[in-house]
Image (cartoon, rainbow, N blue to C red; front, side):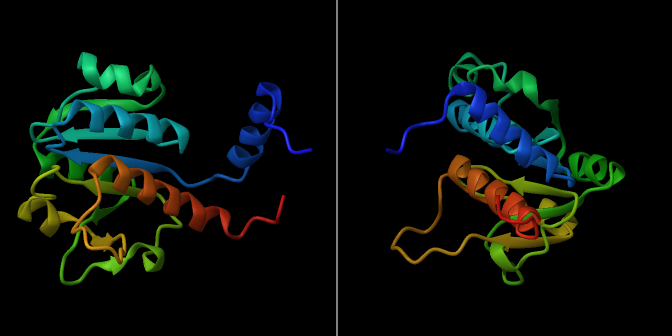
Length: 179
């Protein structure tokens, strides 16, 4: 009979995955204003072991009560910085040793599963309505997109963040032996 893992077993399982994790992940959220999106991104970031989140532009901070309601306290598990101009956030990420990749539909963007994410990487997500600013796109080291085959033009920013974080860790963990 298949049963859910007990809390102790879940902690043990998560510890096993953490041991196979060497690369750092960071995020830049440029003008992501929806508090529920911000809270959801922080929750996903905590689950995937994101080290740092830089808020940029007019991004909503996780201290917003609606963001906090969605984050469920996970904002304390991720280092984050108050909003700065987007180019300052890119510089800060580079200064910390991250490659900066925008998750955006651009002419030169690669499908995310073909992007080189198996390294220290800072993923950039732009506003819900307009995506990343032209200046940020120009400053990024590259861009990748999440392929889709449906009739919708884009993903919700929080969903896109979770998918990008998952693919980043998947690439790193692909070389691990089966467990």
